[in-house]
Length: 97
Image (cartoon, rainbow, N blue to C red):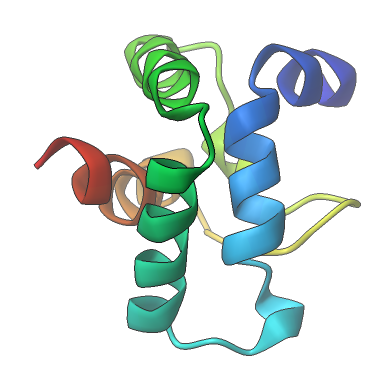
């Protein structure tokens, strides 16, 4: 699972690791602003949006794993639904809403 997620959704993983990693200690609002700025200036905005569309439309993606794994820790959700809602708030809404 790890290899697939990290390879298939490398832009999402990179953003989670750099903008939202809990070890950095940023507030959620600051992390979201950092993420949005990085996404808009990265030159990979369209690729990131495409990955988000695919990931959110798939029932196979484990958002729990995506948000909390051996490489980085963003949010330790209790359920997949909680993880998905959190991911939608921090990843989808800043770019699509």
